[in-house]
Length: 122
Image 1: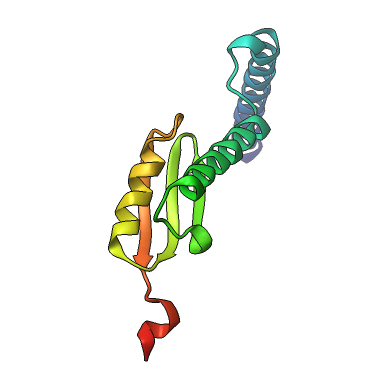
Image 2: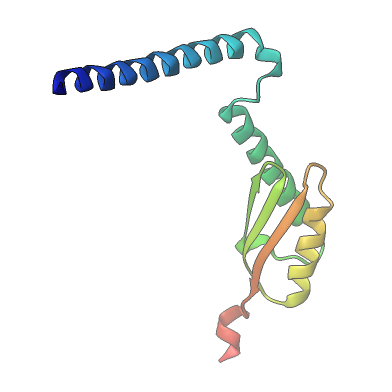
């Protein structure tokens, strides 16, 4: 009796494996036949993110009154994150506004902080 139960369980496992394999093959076939509708590759997405990050960094560098030496820019699918430090609060707000104005930016997460130069003059 135990061997019959074992064979039933084994048959069930084999059926699941075959079904998963068939699904994977049909998905691969659909992906290759519908390449025009497929999502961009991870490499293309990373390239676009790097380009947007450079674009935002360039806009920040061109903006008057922003010290970009301690600002890092990260872009991910149009969402930009600014991290680092600036000498005063006004630069934080201005950097966020400049980043929002760059074409291709869908949102800005401004995580800049104020750090006084030279330890606050002590």
